[in-house]
Image (cartoon, rainbow, N blue to C red; front, side, top):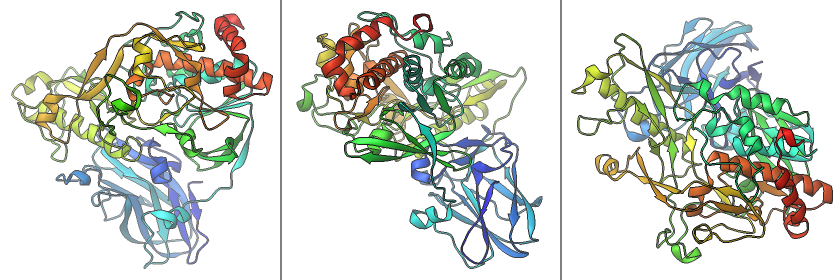
Length: 587
């Protein structure tokens, strides 16, 4: 059921938009649940209105109801003209006079006026008018015609349906995050006999290598000192290269199939972890929310792996972490800046077009980033370097970071189609895909017993627990100087600076928290400096990290020890497992 009656009198009905029974062409956007309190629906039509989302609710009484819709004008933060995210709410087939998504830079309740309803079933529909990212979080129907719901804070949270968490089960290892690192960790642990929960907030696995984001796998596998590492990554690999390609090239079904074939894994898709319970310096449980229904689940285990990318579980558990660039004086890194700052590598909003064989129109976009013949990008696709938010908070400001990337894509495409000197070149091209799930590179990095730094890599320092071999160069991204000159403060293009290096084995001690006793991590949130992240962050490398974490977790269970205890007391056992690998042929 999509709606919930509120306890307070007079009667009211609260509807979470993502719980609509039929989503039509609207997409569920879960990326900002920590800030929003829930997912929301996004009309991601790339300039073509999407099909209606529909549901039914029960009106508790006959009479007049005031209608409120929680939404926003998503371009208002840039004081841009127009409001592209326009939509209507239809009640029993009749559109309200209010056009939603037309006011307010922040999320708020927009007044939809009053309607007269009979008690019983009421049909609701969201009708998109533009295809340009209209967004709806929730709908409130209230018999108190003078009531205005709170926009934020505890009052808003109190309106949302509350759920007492139910047990999802007891596990040996709970892995949060279903990118390449988390997926490989779950598979590796399961093949070593552990009962594993794999929690992923999207309907697909693979993270940046899924059809949501479409980044090909980088880095090499099957290298010394442990050539067997990478076998699980190879099983998940679609075999295709190239960014921003058609969805099939990322083979979501292959990844899902490999995971579902493991009898020791319980997979929880569309489930967002948002809470942690602790006992002393250990995590006792993770609490997650079903993206659609809002149902809460509680996962207990002696071991947890944070593969969220953002270090969400570590952060909630009070794990030590870094964000941004360390000062040169902190680690003596030659590439580090003199003064520490919050600059990070950014988020890509990639896209591509297709030849339709005939002219295809595209709307004017006065609300988007403005281009001219000197600043236009002359592009039929956007790769990794359509990247934003390097100087922004990649967690707290992530919605505006993603939105700015889309303003750049839409503004550039509209100019090329409608006003560029060479617009005939683009006449038959159709905008086929624009990512609405941002491809993030860097945010929190959780700190372990070793913080890998630039000199370790350049000097090929030999660690006793050397594990995963990183082969990518030290690849760091910065705002494109030309783009910064043309769009000061609104950059959306980057350059990469590559520092040469030889293959280097990352130590196992980078894969667990130094102050949360039972927390592993794998992925871009491991224990490295900003500079060192440049080489370890690509996905074949992070996938191998997951394989090692799964092996180490099995030793934790076998010897009743902690991730640190594996290094201190059972390192030969870990080396033996890394030598054997976790591929199917080794089982």
